[in-house]
Image (cartoon, rainbow, N blue to C red):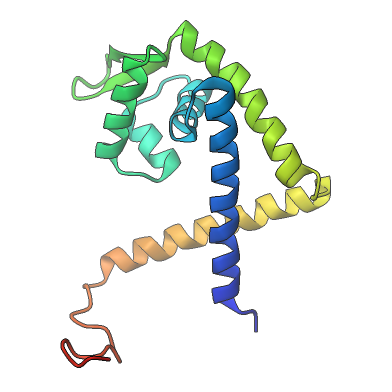
Length: 166
């Protein structure tokens, strides 16, 4: 059987390494942290975009996403418009500066990822990895949905008692 803790650890470490490399490159070349580049990508690829859409795509909280969009808007990279279909939410669009920055930053991120991933993976291996990661994410989301329907555990089995010194 595959050592799932090793797989998990390797995935986490790879994600951290890739995040740090792309973040460093985007900050250096464009003054743009990866945490702002990612939402710009979501906004840029959607015809209409709400805070909820960004939160869903990036798997982050709506409250955190709203604050992130505030910072991106303050930087002049996007703006909010009244949502004609739902007065409780706004639509988010990239500004001209946001579109231009996204275009050049996307090329920079692609270049960095080519060095770190593309140089190692063949096209068939990359397609296989994409399919495997998609299946894992879908299974994880299904498990999360199932877990939210279950009552929370009152204690962890085999956990040391408080104050036991273990």
